[in-house]
Image (tube, rainbow, N blue to C red):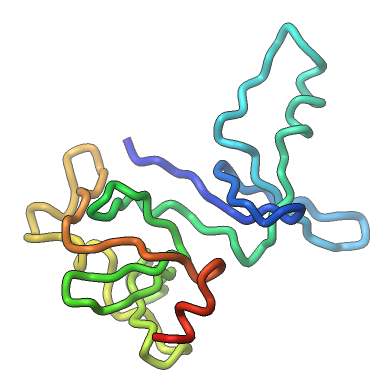
Length: 161
């Protein structure tokens, strides 16, 4: 089954939190972004469920929210929007949404930053057309790519490339 989950950096300590994004708009129109932790479960014997939910809303930095794209690298690491990956030829990409392909793709970070994503993720990761997707809709792991960082934590690395 396809997993739909996200991650974002906490506003209070900049650690990554995984779960489900929620945007709440304040009365003055300000948007606040939160992630409801993926391991959250309501304890019906404890406090009022609403209190438990609020305690598990973690405020995150909006620009850091990235969706898991249902792909794993050669080490089994989950790939998210904003991750930086290296292919078997040493080429470096950042994972971004593509309006052209209506899906996630890999953008060559040496190309013009405003250029549209040119390579859909499934094309880079598939060894053949038959291997693009499994019967249950999950992409295969690929032995030819590796997550080497992300666009939010590794700015110095990106500037050196």
